[in-house]
Length: 160
Ligand code: GNR
Ligand code: NI
Picture (cartoon, rainbow, N blue to C red):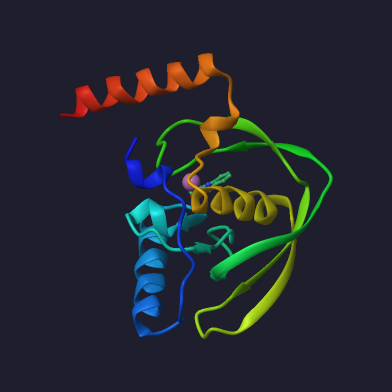
């Protein structure tokens, strides 16, 4: 429920050492969680930055860094189960584009364009939502959202 998750992230003005430190910190946080993606607002930083690594445990890690990303193509529709590090333990189906093309800057400030489908496309859209202050549970019915809020509150009470 932290308000930073509802805020619209601001573009990065310059990809400098401070941004590279942020990216390192985010990658470490994502791997430690563990998660397959992490957006800057999830660690309280309101900038348009996210990292993704969808490699499975038996594969070498492959970190994608997205700075000031924009989705420039969406195609098809697919229903996928999603989770979120900011909504721990909740997994629900969300409908999204099946494949997307995204353009962004990498950690060196170089522009790249990527075609993505499958889990990578899901993650890119999930992280893009974090940058506009949206969390995946907002796609669910009011009833489900109310139940999820109650569940998280109950768990918080029990872990205090
Ligand atoms: O770790 C994560 N797993 C995941 C699974 C399905 C769809 C999206 C995700 S992203 C999530 C990490 C996260 O919360 N990123 O914002
Ligand atoms: Ni998330």
